[in-house]
Length: 433
Image (cartoon, rainbow, N blue to C red):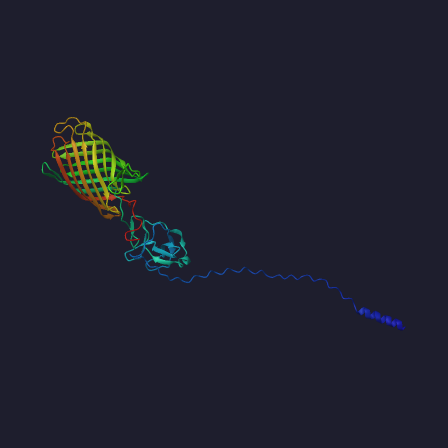
């Protein structure tokens, strides 16, 4: 009985103490978090206001270089340049920019609506303002091409002229004195023509004149005209021969033969002396030239030339052969082409002519000429020059006319169109470095 009671108690006790249950792994709790929107970029910090006031150039301001690159530059507006449009040429090493207005300034120094003439386009993309702050900005006068000048207002003008490349029209008072008759012919001269010049290969310079015409009106009206005149000059490095002297220290002198060529096509001339006139037409003339001296650019020279021409005596109706020899010079006296001196002496002999009553069988001609031309002013950059000219002619080829000298003094004005700057024109304007 006791054993049964003990056994029952133990069973009851073991029933109350149950085995611990193994807990099943809990499923991970998914935590769904809402996706945060991407952070918006912060707006760039606005630069502090730039109250820089760029000054306009003055007459003493430096000038921009013609061969440098121009940048478009936007600066804060000023009373003088309200648009803020400028042109800059910068030196990266010095951190300095020469700055000029992009428009011409008016007489009050304010921006006008007229863009600068004869400048290169600035680089299309503007120079950033932030970068411009890193440079020292200096007021400057915009660049000008060689042979041109720009003032502090940005206006451009030409100060260098090539009178060997032009279309010209002029007039002059041209009285003539006949020595034998002591008479004076009151005349005026009208002249026009086209001058061309261009360099060639091997140190050669070509020159051409078209429609060179002189009309004399008044007493003893006449004319002289040439359809085409062409010549070239050259510079040879090797001397033709060498001369050595032995008086004292031996010295060597080099003699060069700078030969060239000259030709003329259709040269017409009408001669009037008192009541007698004669007409001559040179069909073609070819001469060999020898430079006694010429400038390094071959533009100025002193030379001799000689050769024949075939001429038609239109008054008497036959052809002649006319050999000629001349000494002549053409000098440009200054760098900018304002002063020119021309001179010449030419002798001609008329051969193979038929006999004509009242004149020798082989007539002769001698022509002397000296002239000076100086530019006085320019209208729309086209020069107006003063011409002074003295001429003398001796001839006996006009039948029944008195032989001897005829002298003429001529003074007038000449207007030149298309007279560009000389090829040797400086790249800086007068007074500018």
